[in-house]
Length: 122
Length: 122
DNA sequence: TGACAATAGTGTGCGGCACACATTATAATG
DNA sequence: CATTATAATGTGTGCCGCACACTATTGTCA
Image (cartoon, rainbow over all chains, first blue to last red; front, side, top):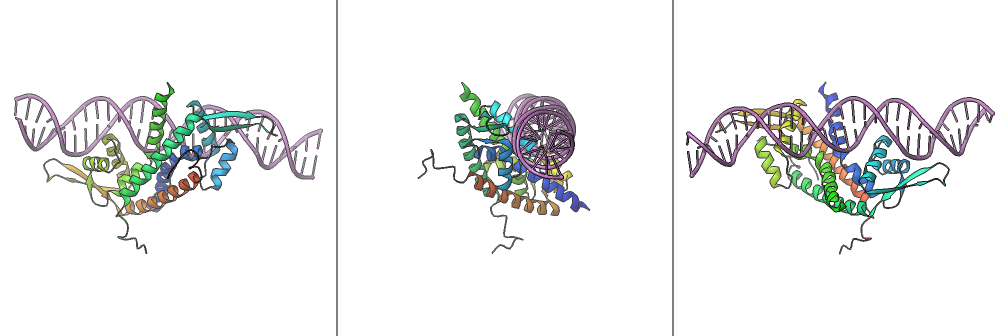
């Protein structure tokens, strides 16, 4: 039953695919401040599920790198740590968007001409 | 001079971005058999530079997973190890293409509406 | 013959995600 | 009032994979 393994392999590779994109996805939503818990649900709704245990360390790393700024809001019922892009983070984000576009472009280039052989697309 | 670090950060993130895509890129070129050295230069020419020390282990892993088949060609001057997609590899590749398209889609969705504020595109 | 290129292999390190676990405090419920 | 659930953050471990630097072999050409 290699079919079982095949599903696992695909899952693993797909996960690898998404791996680097997580940062881009997170940065894209931090134009306005947000706290971890909200971003987790928000990204989840937008088709980008991410574990809380993945996002929180990511936030801290990005802050340590200077891409994010954080501030505690203790006025609300429960204290929330809001993160938002720093000016440097904004620059990096924009550069990263370019990199992403470029990447999408090259991949599209690579995959070009491979479909239509056993893939009857109208 | 955080500018220096900024470049490094971007480079790192960009590398992370490309990380998972390497498999997809490699698989996309293995419809017809190729050997490592040739694929390294080919991908490099197509805007997808990859280290030989990255590709060879990748090949071996993909073969161990059953996605690739290999055969030695000893007729040529120097022996070359040709890899090509197995039938399972082809399936996985196609599924991976779908995953990729989906990913590109969600990211595009995430990034939507964020440009045009300080980015004067014609 | 000697040097360089082609070709393959590996092993170590660094880093990141996922997952499971821990923690606090508030709100809700009986 | 006590108990439970939930919002919210934090962390530490394990697995996995790339990059890089290195080794090894064999042709080819000067």
